[in-house]
Length: 161
Image (spheres, rainbow, N blue to C red):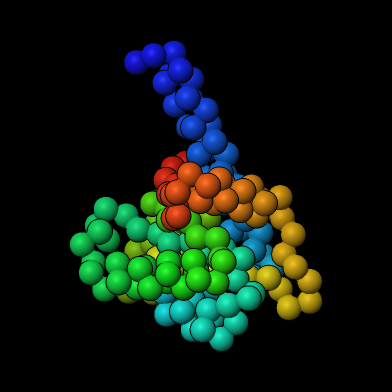
């Protein structure tokens, strides 16, 4: 490995870590402001009714979801819709970490509520004023940089803490 490759890997790793933290901050802030839509079907309904309010679409999977054909078809359709409507889109792994960030249960038992479908999460603008958050700008610029590199759907891995 050359010095350029080592330095390049370190810069990329730090950028991914920064964007991951920004995404977590953004999701927490959006949840506090009631600007999150969680779930594949709920997200599809919102995008059909009011696509202009959506500022970011997060598609989350883990290894066990890779063989779920129905989920992959939904993702393909959502990605196409987001590209057609100029909505930033981000694929992430780490549903367990997403659940921690959003304070959602991750397992079902007889006493717990059914966990929400965290495979698709939309961040929307509030009705009265645009959603302003430095984390949104950080994630948005990462998405834009990725598109400039012909990576239309950037990928992040959320790390458990």
